Every structure is written in C-alpha cells, then in structure tokens.
Length: 170
Image (cartoon, rainbow, N blue to C red; front, side):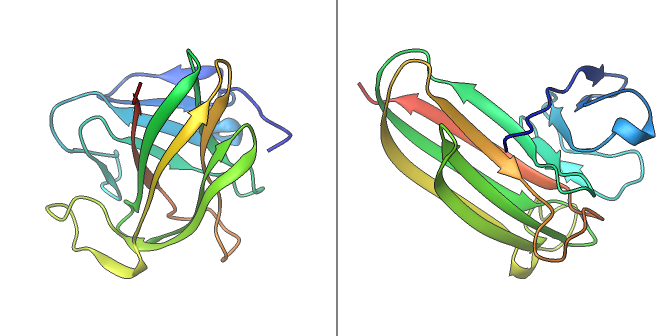
C-alpha cells in the first residue's frame, strides 16, 4: 500500500456517492462508494446493491487496493468491528484487510455474494468476512480497511461491501 493515491473526484449524481482517483473511465478504479440513504440502493446496471450506510469498494485491474482510512483522534482502547461482504450478483472474489499503521490485523478472502438477501441469495465459498478486535491505539494511528482483486487476479464483478464500527472503550 506504499503507492497510496487519494481519490480526488467525487460523483454525487445519485444517492450512492462515488470517489475515484481521476476523471474519466481510466481513473474509475479503485473506487469507494457509500449509500447515504435509508434504503437499499443498486448501481445503475443493477449488478450490485449497497445497504444503508454501507461502503462499497473495488480495487483496480492493475492491483491497486480500494482503501478507507480512519485516523485515531485520541489515545486509548478501541473496539473495532469490520464486516466485509461480496455485494456483486456475479459473486465477488476479493482479498480484504484491516491494518493498523500498515501492520496487518486481519486478512481474509471474499468469494461469493454475502450482501442483502432481498437483492440476491447469499452464496459462495466465503461470501463474508468479519474482524472483531480490541486495540490500544495512539492519537494519529491509522486504521486502514482495504479491498484488493483477490486470488483470481481480476477486479471484474468484485464490488465488496463494508460496515465499520469503531468505539472508544475508555
């Protein structure tokens, strides 16, 4: 994740907002999207659905990760819950990670559909992955949540959902 590239383009023309590295199709991936509504929303092609307050992520064909980061505001003990799920109807195949300051805390493979069952039946070898941890963190530490292209080496149909809850247990 050394070549971190900040998404600079926001597209908010639908209830699902997207963040991309650059304008145009060449800069579409990796992306991060979020459903800010109170209802299940589908992408324009009807291929994937993102639940309310869920983040959708997809890496690039070149192997760049889609990453969401949280900077710890104050030192203390934090409870972390990260739920990843394949949300593409053609069955996502991704690798997912949670890191603290670039050190691995959790790694898993997503293979299948594990999103909202009202959109598509849950199926696949490992359609969901969950990280639960309690960590002592310092102010300024960075928690990273990443989605890659998985063992098949392609980002085709790899939209992966993420719900994150971070609470201070002080």
